[in-house]
Length: 573
Image (tube, rainbow, N blue to C red; front, top):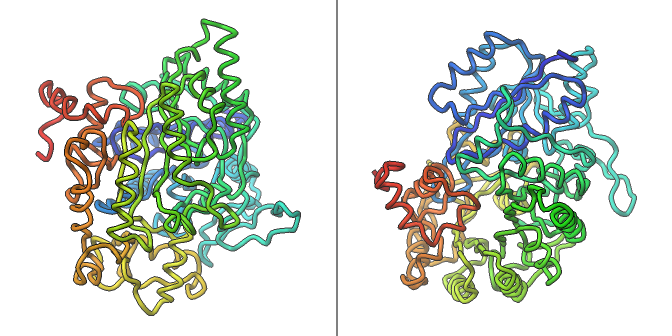
């Protein structure tokens, strides 16, 4: 049994299923530290999850339980569906079944970790990559060492939710960085295992079953580096994952990809913040894939179908050629807008400068198509300053790209430690609302407090998810300069329906097959929300693989076929 048993739980019941990659990462590190590790995955136990947990704890007594929270909600401004209520129900059941301490983590958890430790009533939390901290925590528990010695650990104490200071941080200019109490915008590279190969399994009892996820339509995630050096105003990742890039060993990553391909998992998708933001490292990884393919025609990497997230720049001819040679089938690019005045102060580097123009997006699409790769280009509307005219200009420019698929989203989910979320809290100052703040469940004006006026990080973070009575109130933002009437803008639960209608009007119906557009209902074949989406469910039921958007142009035929064979019911039924 080694040093003790650690249980890892995936409470995510959303379908189509997404493999809990984080649990493979944690399992790898814990096993290397001589702990026995088991996984209880509730994704495939949506109805009988209580029985699943009861049977497990009836037979086993772990020393620690880890729960991964991938998403707090759908992050879809027109649906605003929270997941943490379901997660709390599961965690409460775990607490009833075991006295083992519980630690929470994951990218969603890391967006508001202090508030979620408090809300779930759990013992510990980890902000950012967890492989080093969970091993140190497990060691402390089995040796009797105080958990206040576990660097970076968030602890639920009688004095409140606090964090153990992390190791001394050093900025690029070699000046010591003073850790902030809530750990905002820190270098988290020390939390990452950059040298080892993450072990990926299929069919092993009480482990993540990667092949099962793949057979149910899920792509296999691949992490080549952790963290992001940029400061895009709507993005949680620099804060949650870290402001420096922790690059993983190239051979270790490709070993992992080769292992997955050998298991028959051929469609693999990068999970980096953006694959090309450390482009020299990305190129070296692609070269290693190509080298192995050429060295051995029987290498399973020869059948690899790679899918990547990228920003418009850097992206040159060499990179496009390497992607194609490595087996890349499609590139998803977050271009977000076309106007310089909109991107300035929004899509920015650490120093506050923009890092691409629309010409870079045009070049990326052209290079991808020339190299036989599909493209999805995404625009995000509703940032401060967005107007009917800026939206119109962006739609016209993006449609002229002739990308494989173009996605238009409207509205932003605000999180406590994104630059935009912090700016809105400062502007509210605890005494006023700000035009554009919106929640579908708001019962009154949304007034946020800056962290300096809160009792601590719990109070500051929770106001972005809950109202004063503890009810869910997911805070979103829509530009008040769009064409909505005054009543909508001044109503904290108002819906920006006229802006949605405008988006549909701006796209020629003949082009609807290659466009994702927001919908007010949140459940139609045109809906680009992921959770329990009928089109995505159809893809999975019919055996399609690869990035879902690669099949978007054929969605009407796919939906009809799925309905004919009974994979899904009529949309909207």
